[in-house]
Each structure stands twice: as C-alpha cells, then as structure tokens.
Amino acid sequence: MIDEKWLNKIHCMDCLEGMKMLPDGCVDLIIADPPYNISQKDSHLSDTRDGKRREISFDFGQWDYDFNPIPYLEECKRVLVEQGSIIIFTSEEMYGVYRYWFGKNMYPKQLFVWVKSNPLPQFAKVGYRNATELFFWAMKGRNTKDNPNFIFQSQEEMTNVFYEPIVGGKKRTEHPTQKPLNIFLHLVRTHCKEAGIVLDPFMGSGTTAVACKQLNRNFIGFEIEPKYVDIANKRLQQDVMHNWLEAKEKGGKVE
Image (cartoon, rainbow, N blue to C red; front, side, top):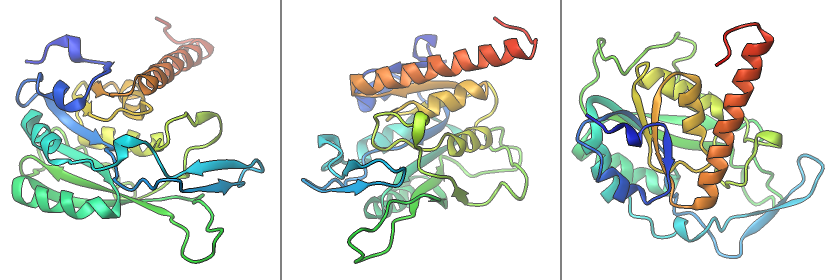
C-alpha cells in the first residue's frame, strides 16, 4: 500500500532517491522522458517559423550528458504492478540500450513514433528535417485481454504512430523538451485504469500530471530542477482553473 503523501504531487528530488522510497508493485504505469544524451556544446539554430526569430540551443544542460538509465530502469520494474507498463521517450542513440535491457528483464512490446507536423527547418540544407521522435512500450509481465491496465481504444486510435505538432504558442513552457498533451492523454487513457497510479520520474513541464488530472488518474512525479517543478505546478493550477470555469459556464457542479 502506498502512502498518500506521494500521490498527486511533484516532488523536487532525484527520481532514483524517490523511487527507492516507494513500495514494490505500487504503480500501474510509468511514463518517462529521460535525458537523451544528445546535447551538443555551443550548438544552436535560428527558428523563424512563427515570424519571430528565436535561437534554439542544442545544449539542453548538464543533465543531458552521460546519463546512465539502468539504475532507474531497475527501480521502475520493481515499483510496477505485474500487469503494468512503462513507456519511455528516447533518442535514436539510446533506443538500443532500452530495447536490449527490456529484452533481458521485462517484456518489450512496441516502438511508437511521434510524427511532428511542424519540424524544425534544415537551414544548412545538408540533411533531412528531423520530423520524428521515438518512444518505446514494455511491460513487467505478459499482456492479456483481461488486463485492467490496458484499455483498447478504437482500431483507428490504436496505431503506433502519433501525429502532433511540436508544442508552441501559449501552451509552450520554458522546458526544452515539452511533449504534446494529446499523446500523453492517449497513453494514460490506454495504459492505466481509472483511479490508478501513474509515475513520471522526469516530470519536466508537467504534461503527465495534467493528463492524469484530466482523466481521473493519480500521479507521482519526480523532478530534480526546482524551476521546472514551479512550471509544472503552475500548469496544473491553470488546468484546474480552466476546468472550473468551463463547468461554471455549462451550469455544472463547481467545487
């Protein structure tokens, strides 16, 4: 049984330290967007797609250098329920590491592809525009039709390709690797039962928490950078206020 002090909060701490304090088999789904190990010193490009010039740095920070995923993967497996899933966003450079580890220690399921409708331009014109990003699904145990943590949607929805633009405009936060909310809504809805528990070890801008809040799932978040914890909590507060105003306009129950 998990202590409620962990639930529906973003804890400002290293995820490895935090997960070690969680009991075995306590979460239904893990969604992780860990470091990609792709940062490049003094590398950037100019983005003018929205008519305004802004510099995009490919040096995401010290956290994106020399990241070793194995210790946190071992903790992820321990805290998952037997019919639980883990979904990890990854770079091409790191995909082989995850695929190999899952093959030896869990049940690898499928590779997913996020297709970006608004990829960054290729100003140098020496390669293709990078319009895709990868994420991978594995399970602790074998999947079955009666798994409460796998809710099959329609055939049209259940493809392993997701078409979403890079987050921009007013929805964009200061976090450099923010992912589209629609993808996370689909993953949470499909891979976690209602009122279940979703763990995000690298909470970042808070997308997992917002998805859980909208879908009546509990979440546990870890984020080591205080600035991003503040950003994520602000997004949660804005989402709660938006839902409150929407319910009020529709004449529904407002709590």
